[in-house]
Image 1: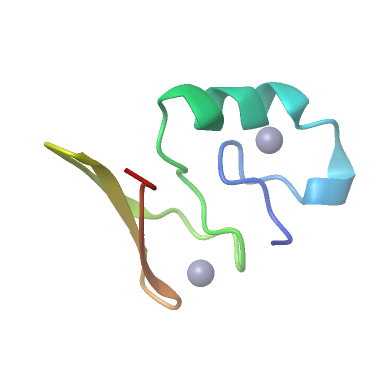
Image 2: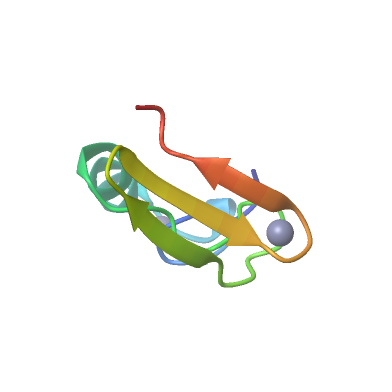
Length: 62
Ligand SMILES: [Zn+2]
Ligand SMILES: [Zn+2]
């Protein structure tokens, strides 16, 4: 991944440890890790899905 899924800034651009902990707890990623596009996020009964128009859909681990 090149971009932070939480804030959309390049992974090397800043310290994303706070973002990582947010993503680990509850929040779906809002930005695609490949292209930093905003993703369409849907919360489902089991978790969430997030879809990039270029790179397709990812889902929560649970
Ligand atoms: Zn971040
Ligand atoms: Zn993408």
